[in-house]
Image (cartoon, rainbow, N blue to C red; front, side, top):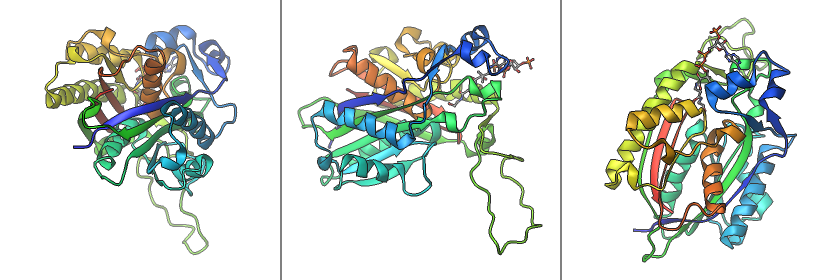
Length: 334
Ligand code: UT7
């Protein structure tokens, strides 16, 4: 069976750092509230960099780390909830930026779980003997979706991108995805919503009123039932990580790192308690970057790889959760 090997990673984080004290200048909040409730101290926000640009920067770094020409890519997968265009897809824009003319391209929207969904897809594509290299890019500009007058959401999110070249590994190598578990609870979709454009055309009856699917929403800003998402996150983090560990025949202690979606350090700590695992295994980097949605897990992964803390042969679990509501976990050998 073909196996997935991560042959290069790279990230792009905007230079613009917005601290909690800076947030406290625009909404009624404080560094004390934000750090104690979320673990977030600061976040990077786009100074205008579009999503496609951040994606391209991260992708070029990952290709360079892999020593691979863009022309060798067979597939480009982009995970984003914050594209710059409805059409074309961010993956197609990226293809043109990179000159990856041979690749087919698609965007994946599984919100903050996007990276885990796309990793599963990349692994499945690599079972096809015609496909040798998949570029997986997670790029998010959450600042586009956030109401900077709403203290309950604007302090949480950040912008950034990260990319991974996933290549088919040689038979004798240990690198592989060992197990995945993906899921969704669409019935709870109302808990985390950002609306798109409304229907408006010359032939419709201007008096017709169709109710919004998730209650009345006047704009595209993120609306979240924070405590509901919190409870969901703790449950699915723990349950799906234990599920993939069971599938792989591993104990969580066998893992070098567990990288959860970086939404809130209290979620990570509560999930660690629920799994009865050493919290030190759980990577927690939201302090510097906030919640970058689907980019949060690969940003952490890239940091671990670039700093030399993650070594070939190490086993890693990743776990995402977010709007949908979606969730997903995977265990792989780096
Ligand atoms: O990636 C997507 C997934 N998203 C998440 O995982 C988010 C999950 N949820 C959470 O992380 C937490 O629920 C939040 C961080 C969003 C909120 O923390 P909380 O401990 O659940 O606070 P809360 O919503 O219960 O609010 C407590 C109080 C409220 O005031 P009252 O009603 O008690 O007077 C809020 O108005 O905190 C107030 N509050 C704030 N105060 C200062 C809410 N946001 C802020 C703020 N600064 N930024």
